[in-house]
Length: 159
Image 1 (tube, rainbow, N blue to C red):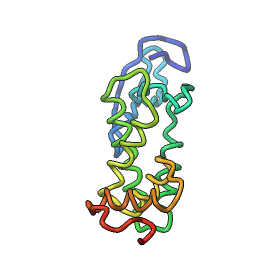
Image 2 (cartoon, rainbow, N blue to C red):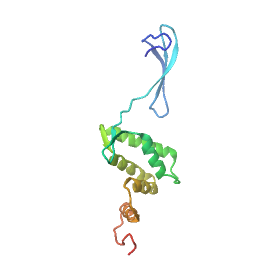
Image 3 (cartoon, rainbow, N blue to C red):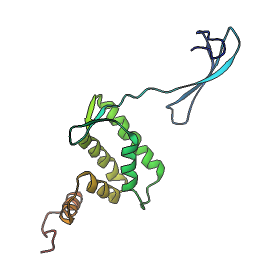
């Protein structure tokens, strides 16, 4: 690591500490030439795949887009912010572990639904309604019937 004071390339680490999440390392360094001390932060570079949209466009993976969708689905529900963060981390890890260069939005949406389902059933249905583009009440009823394992004994219109 280059010394910010004298530009010497050979510095030594005198202390290292990880943050609580374990994804960031803080290092105190010292330059043997000028005795200058400085702090560096080290994080693993996470290479995320491009997201392939329904229309074929490709965009960079943006955690905030998934986060916004999950937060909207969880609005006015008793889902802790920490649980949403954990859910987001799980989804990101799953995506990284796939090792793909590109991932379809439908795959990401399916992952979100799989993680939301055990967390909050209402949030799951809300997210599914947007993700699967429900057009009317019949689509909601069909999703609820699938979710609850109910056979279609009564038509969605009540007849």
